Length: 318
Image (tube, rainbow, N blue to C red; front, side):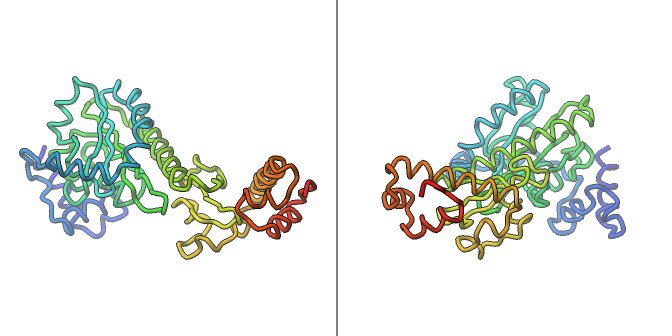
């Protein structure tokens, strides 16, 4: 079985004509040609980072771990009962955190699914963690779709998590060693993993821009193309955007702090922005007893800017 799998991988990966035909042909080709991994090589005592090195990586990913922890807990309550492991990696594919039943720990750790293990595509070839990070999309890697023959007992459902600047922050993976895992159930878990990744991304973004107004665009956090959130300052300028929002709305790093939100939003979203801004200004006026200068100071804008915004928003109290 090991030899047959390795031969299949080499045949597909070595043929440029196979690209686009086999589901993971491109990943297999990267693994074989670029990373020079032998699909038949047996990993005995696969290396893991020392605890001190793993601790350093966990410290560097502090916000990711903090935000992800309750989301992973919820995901584990469903996935672990089905004999799965829930794993969180950093952007380089090193596992930082895990959730699994005590009785399953030996199985997963023997398969090297444990904190400190490197599951980048460059180390393991095609797999749920490394390939979702390289291709920056959710993946389901079904048993013999793995590159290494030693990993073909796994079914892995992975999804990338993006940071507040649209960069990769890490990845979530749910892996199973059960032979009775159905493809339909794997697809269902994959959707849950993707939803968890979106939740973490949204919370990281909100934490990064805690002082700004956060506006959901389109379907917001449940958009099929990813989390669609904008951070807007007091002058209605976009100061932050999630990866999906940047791609969907054509926002670049050069736009940050100088692009008015209304220039890129659809009519419905602009109306929502206006309503939110009108409410903020009305509350500031009420707290200031109708004193425009005091309300402007509270909002951190000039009196002239307050009047200009009030006129544009038809705020009758001003």
